[in-house]
Length: 99
Image (tube, rainbow, N blue to C red; front, side, top):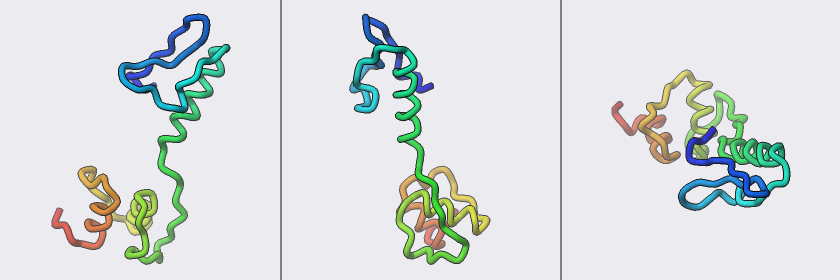
């Protein structure tokens, strides 16, 4: 569980943290199970979507992070963790970085 968030009860269950609460968690919940379900949906929304890229896909046509990482995986390449943005990942895969 994300350590920034805390479930509080003040007659209703609410997610709380210092700073702004994510919109998916901003409501109040009558049951603890409803708050837990909201948390699950919030966590799922943060995950990258699955990619269906195949080995023969044209690297130059790929632009989103999930597709670039899937292309690297099916081509047995490992992208260093320091490349986080899609543009940096693409440059690395195209051989424009010397890592």
